[in-house]
Image 1 (spheres, rainbow, N blue to C red):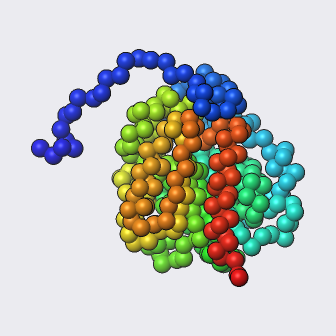
Image 2: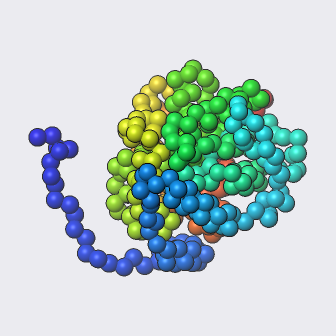
Image 3: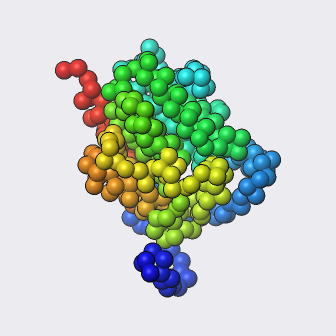
Length: 331
């Protein structure tokens, strides 16, 4: 019998309390304590589209309340643009209103169903402020009305349109969580098409395995105070009947020996997606793709909501991006 098919006895762990880590800032501990009082999400039935839409609306409203944009609005400005027929936003620092030579193509997170509409504008403003460059952010369509492959198709169309405006070597693609899934799948689609890769790829706690086969989906279940449990109901809704192991749905399972851009990946030790980041980094490394991995102490999915550790992580990601952009600058 194949070892994968053998019925091994699972590890039994006694019920225990996990204390707040003293290895992080007081602000980080406060965030972990506050979010620990949250509850696991109950998802609607797969065919109950009205309930899905109601849940998405309520979740987006909650996300909107958490994104404080006053400082971002002061530092940057955004306008709607069309990228290949995809409604998008262009955001620039107010100190560089005419744009910058360096470009960030930002794919928002939200579990493949959240974060659309005006939230895309807010995310674009945030990215322009944090990186100090011109940002383009597509408002890609999402389930339940637009499952796979529509979201990926939108990202591809928007990126190809961006290539008509800016050279690939000046563009870095960034994707967080579900945006990380789409960012990685975008690279695979570009490779299939023979289109140029961007100069680099930033993946923040990427959702690149919709089968959820990694170890941390069990060991960090309930420990991650942001993503408490499996997202499988959403993954199935997004996949729309396609095989979850398809690399366009789960880029972790792609063949990277055929080419992939330099990549930096971030995660945290309490992140439900920790295994995603670790496995993806190792897979890229074995394929000879330049890859860096940042694992933040005690960080749950998406960060600490403003603690000093978030600024440290941003500094590392921004430093990496600046090094990539400098390579593309004329001497």
